[in-house]
Image: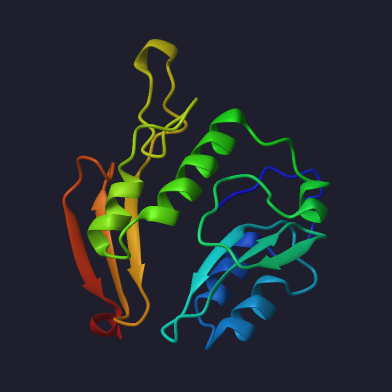
Length: 176
């Protein structure tokens, strides 16, 4: 997930850091890779592992934080990281609050997670955000919806929105 930050600099491109995180063996390795020194910028990583461990790692060029969280949207949750990011957009805050409330009572199933991704009730912007043609709003369009099942080593992906897309499951072991 992207964070809008004020501390980008010359360094290791964040896309290369993110690619390296994908090769991590476990949570500690993923965290070390995401927070390596010399980053040009950063991302927020929502990490989950086959053993059930999960975490969020927020990074910028100069800051990083690790936290236990099952929900994240495109704004910094950690106060230290937030010091070098731009203020959270109202839509991001609304999506976060709605997602956090849904996660508390959702069934821990694929259908339960899809229901959260397909939710249209957050204010002022829904989790399953659609462009507003009247405002020429194409920048916040969702390109795909994805669920990961680390224990099964699979990704279930729908092109477009979770509310209308057809989900297809891919086993990562098939791509070795």
